[in-house]
Length: 139
Image (cartoon, rainbow, N blue to C red):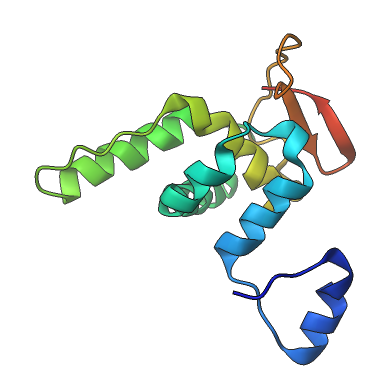
């Protein structure tokens, strides 16, 4: 894997180098760490397939709805996984659903209103990354 600095973005496009989606997601989380759980990058490395499924379903929903529940999407992913995989014990921790929403917003700022953000002012990680504002109170 190639380590990238933010100043290398144009050079990479010029040279045709493409950062894989997981590395890009981790970099986005690290650049906006005030809005994520401290251990979200660890979770993401082990569960990127969950985020990818969340992103795919959220984009499908965004075509027909202006607002939707991230918890419902994760419930559908869990349900479908259990049905399609024999003896699956697949579970999604609700703790990381808000972080998936924050990451989705970083990748898709055009859908920033698809999911609600609830204010939790007592936590450091209770900040949400809004594409228009660096950090705002959130989930």
